[in-house]
Length: 240
Image (cartoon, rainbow, N blue to C red; front, side):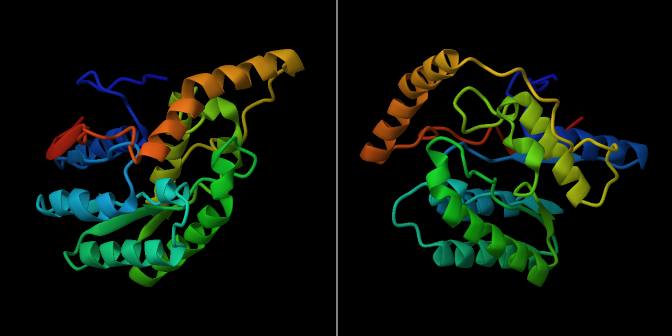
């Protein structure tokens, strides 16, 4: 799967969804513009604050608000407070007349490290469903997407999606917006051959050295992998 945008950047699920929306608009004789203000590692306060301010200033028709997963990884996170912040952001967008695309969290039980966030993620997912229903939002259900629990759907860091994972989530979002998707596109991948125990252990050790240790270092020092970064496409512009 192609994983690079026309501008040379990483093609995530949102870019892939924008491709589909742009093609639909062209077929209907309409223009389509797209902005992407997301930054890896950011907490919900930034998403519903600075990012949302910048998004609404551009008067969009559809705003995707996906966040809270990083907050769930932090000790002492109050999920009720997260849900209140999320709902306030949704109310703010809906007051402009724009539609909102939300998402559940990812099912993380059994995943290394992030499985610690599973109870909070489950609670936030329940809140997301309730908020979406109260305010007439579209909601992408990735919690129940069993195919996403395959490690081939995830990058080497085991936290972010692989190209396969981004394509799957993009299709899930496309379906959430009410569009048809190919039969079987959400089915799990065929099973892989069993990996010998020694090879698995060596892989876990390499992952811990390369990704876990730096992640713990950032947590201990209050830093994020997204520090100093801005959204890759901050201005609403023609796409596709």
